[in-house]
Length: 556
Image (cartoon, rainbow, N blue to C red):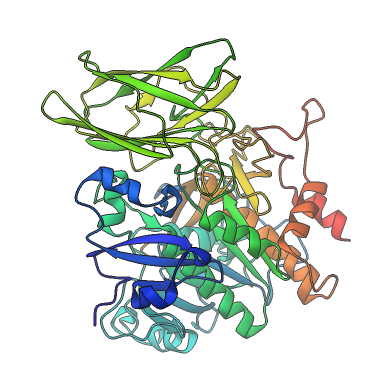
């Protein structure tokens, strides 16, 4: 029997359970949680305009890591030195849903060479291992199995899961790595334990929807959500508090907190003894966002997109806010003209230019999650040069619109908007309203990292929430070594460690045993460090820098 969650013959859509006929669809559906399920669709399209047969929100977002790892170490005392803080994560679980972990790394071993990892679910190993209870793919490795492997001279011959990319190992280390004075390193909470999910790569059919190259690191909504569900199930079974570190990002969607993963993380934040920390994104200086405004008496406005020869396929999304409605036309670098698409609920048009460039334009008048208009433009083999867009005001009311290119990893730095806007560049799921979204600053200079995505959300609620150190952070790297990492992913890891401290204080020490994620966010905001000459909140810093000493004083 075909396992459709693994089969490359099926496109994985993500739909709300209320919109699925479970009896009719049978094994074409894989439940994800109480709200969403995967719909497996075989031979989903014969041409890209066939996508109009599915609601836009059903196409899964594709996510990329939000840190850069270097083997270069910084020869200074590590910023994560624990400042004599009273809490070290004892009996708190940390959930890492990313590229896996190098479980035999010294950063994750007890003194007796046993593991500090409770379990690993490797979604990529599907050749005879046992998946976790309630899941139908991958292999679960328990603490007992890890300890057995660690006794062997060749641990990977016993438990073959590992981290080929280093992102999961880095995150786990910054949060909970063992102290190593020789390396000037200590994780924020070196007594916490870990639950790790190694994500499988997104299916090619899902990549094809957004023209994502096949060799790029790329994860899809459903695998991330199932990984989070697994971490929660482990925490509930052990009756332990849990902090989830989500250091992945996507530029798909309205940047407004909607979307399946964002919604799920918001619900988790409302549960007792659980918290979610999300990276804000590294899109602040990448020129991948454009913001425009058409006045009520203005017929149209313009924007330009510089396209690099390196980029053979990509998409852009233009979002308005209801009741505003717009239409676009496009002129290629060679002067070929694509007229505006007729207005309709779900329209699509395909255009072939200069014998090789193909452009598909989808116009969705009311996205099923937000009610706002989205125009989705996909380019295959686009001509290098300056593409010109005109945006027409169809309602003759003042209308603001935002346009996004794909995020890092999915497109080169040489494709960008002219007159781009660095604001509203928080990646999904970082626009989720209640979870904690973390931007990055340089702990040496105290300045915001130039790569940090800026807020607010498209719908103007405050994001990011807080800032944490995220430049040249010493961390465990592959090969049982140490290096450094930069990015809002590294900053989110630091913040996750601080959240684990609060969970230990509240749940393990009994000060507030039903504390919720949004309660913890309030504590960190109250104790944050703020510049007396700056107004807060703001789109760069949110409510300020996480302040361990300020938190210490508040909890005392």
